[in-house]
Length: 354
Ligand SMILES: [Fe+2]
Ligand SMILES: [Fe+2]
Image (cartoon, rainbow, N blue to C red; front, top):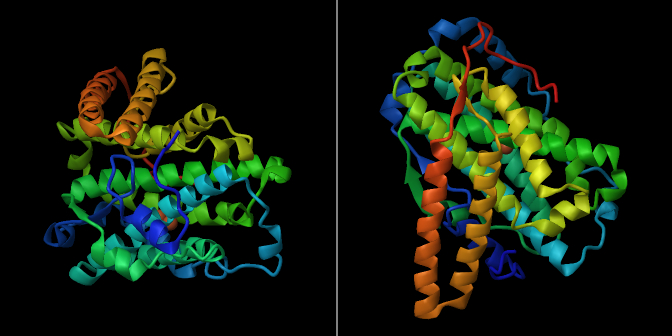
């Protein structure tokens, strides 16, 4: 259970969004010249079809509240409310991170294909971020996005790391939102906030964003072969492990939705793995008992680190160090577990069918 400071004011929400922990969403910058050199001509027909979908903009009217929105916000226990706020702030930070990155790439490059794509994706992410921030505003906790943009630390990633990480976060974002949506569609009594009703059409945007990166990587097959396969394995594990650990810091949120964080996590991994076969030649064996035991251990270690931080002092610091080493070792062990290999399909694009 998280022992971080609660979110009681808009300043607290801003601090939470700014935080740079191992599991908090980050802001990125990259090499724009390298982005300029990308060539997607080998996937041109699939690319053009996708761009038409972006232009058609079938979600242009989706991110508006209906008249009954406010009345559907239920009372929450203080614990649930804090976890829900943490979920909103963390989701907002991810959406805004995408908005900034895509927009910066758009502004700094001339490659017409990539520039147009980045413009559409920034448009979508800005709607997503704005919609979440409205729900924070209901509680007087809207995050000052201008300030966040100026003051949060940016991590530099080479384009290929941006592609692996962003592709995965778009696709796992889809899998997370659709799993929550399907659960609450079946159990409307557990829908304690109306924002979840927006998730279905919302996650189709994320799915399409992921498709864009899939096409870029398939058009540049070097990104998917040789030593790069080790990077793909690294990013798969980093993204899965981060999600697993982060979701376990919000037990009340999962109870309220009738989801077990472990089962929820493995459902999301299964969906994400089915999707990533469109582009990655390897996938993690998330059903393997050693994999599952390793993730459980990472989650336990993360709790120990939180407790050591809360304890403070020399003992707390030493404990933090000890558990950080244990975390690193566990991650490394997970990394070297056998993975599944597969060949890539001729047709790259998929439909969001979950
Ligand atoms: Fe988004
Ligand atoms: Fe997205």
